[in-house]
Length: 201
Image 1 (spheres, rainbow, N blue to C red):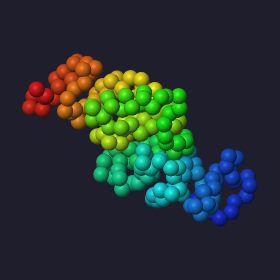
Image 2: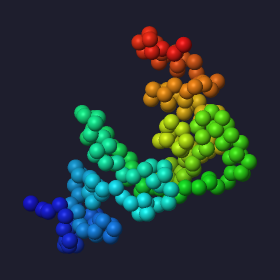
Image 3: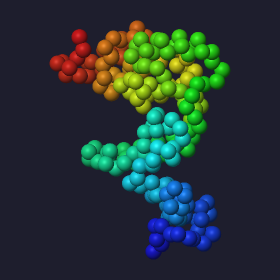
Image 4: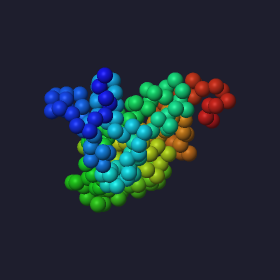
């Protein structure tokens, strides 16, 4: 039976030909056995990568790598949710480029759209470039993991507000004031599915 971790391995055991992948130097540089059924980065299991080893701004947007202790309270869904969160975090890290201002937009454009978003309680957007190009998150809002494209945020902030409110409502957060772009049927349909004492007035 092969060991899960070795200091040295033959060349034909090394990825991408073989099943062993080398951990980064900050994690010891050892060779780890990786299978289709295992964690693709097993050297991270049970650890939280120090902030100084993450790209600048990444932890602000995505936090540290998920830990099992963050999910075990979910009982039956714990393992699936934990594994999905790890994969998502790793992919976000692999594709993350930078945090900053999207190129090609005037400062006035961004200021005007930000004013709309702040008025509707989303707060100032934090822009970043990742696997889907330039995106934005609203770290001052109730949904800190809500993403929207930078293009939509800057050009159509009212549309972003309405989709944000629909998403927050689906997660059980009722906005203090509905944006007029939110279709009335969305609220009515969900209210009809709730017990009478939980329906909005």
